[in-house]
Length: 265
Length: 197
Image (cartoon, rainbow over all chains, first blue to last red; front, side, top):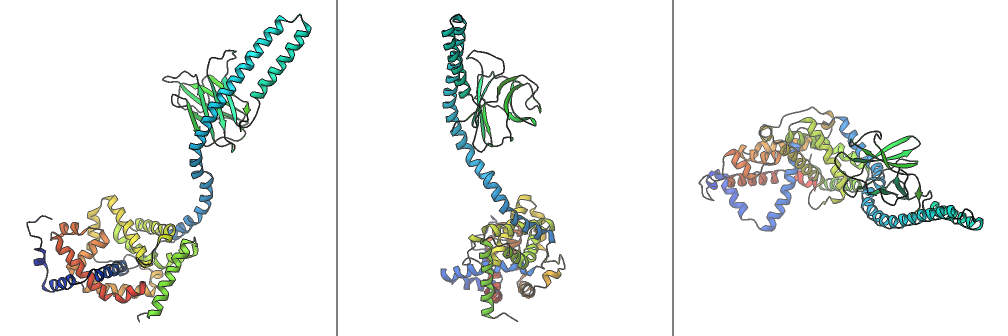
């Protein structure tokens, strides 16, 4: 406070007896002062006892006891959902990204090879239709190729390839992968080749026996995202192109679809 | 009748044990702590925040804090009672600061302690009652200026500089009046403090 008084003018504000006591305080040692300060904390701690006690309403204690009882359940719950989910999500996403890259390369490479084999063998079947022996060999090779393709894209647990819904033999066009963690809760989608732009919303849908469940929109240039939840009994995955950001039902074209799960790990 | 030294030590040890049980997740210990202190802490909280419902929220938060942080309680630093009082004061002052209702609080802090609620439950606590009587007596014996700075500092959470500005007196005077008030209370309440430690 700057009122023009010198540092020691405040002494003049004290009454005579107050000033005497200040002189006594100044004579104390540091140890004595420390002890007194500890004591003073207790003096402060006693001041509320001068107030008339006010009994809280019963609900205060009820609510308090309820709150301390609930965390035991919540902590178990949090161990499963909260902290663990957050601990899992990033490593899971990172791990799945690595797996996705590897699997995408491996699976699409294999699928491409198998499709090329099928196309080649179908051509061979047509060309060699007159040659029964050659035809038998070609048919055997075709069956093996189909078998291999079925193996690569066979129903499994962890990975689901998302393919364009329009039939094509071309290797061009969009594709995607859905990765599902072993707990069937954590999942991750990565797609490529989808045209982006304003008013183009790619929405992911999980198909179960009860119908379609919206899983969210693909976001970002990479068109990838992850979520810690997944409905039980997943049958297929759809990606629809929407003109609205969050329709409750798919209203646009289904651009990617997958219903075949492949075990990765 | 003042409690004997052995009784005092026993009671202080019992309270420390209560907090130790709290740290182990003993809900019964929390219930006992609540029964002992809730009414006193609520009176303090109401005095600071000037609102009964908000005071109850403060008390509940403080006892939840005690529940969560019981393991951190250090009996060398303060008694259980003072530990709870300081947490209550701190939380209550945080609330009024966040509400920015300093003027309202000043008014509350400057008035004499008023009876807010007749509490049969609280009245049963003879120890608290006797302590309350002694406290009021001792506070009433303090010169008005000294009691005022003490109350503004404790119940309003005002710094000594803020008190000096509010009362238009030099900062040093505030410090000295606080010091003198504390010195008198220190002597007068020696038995009560010994009871807590």
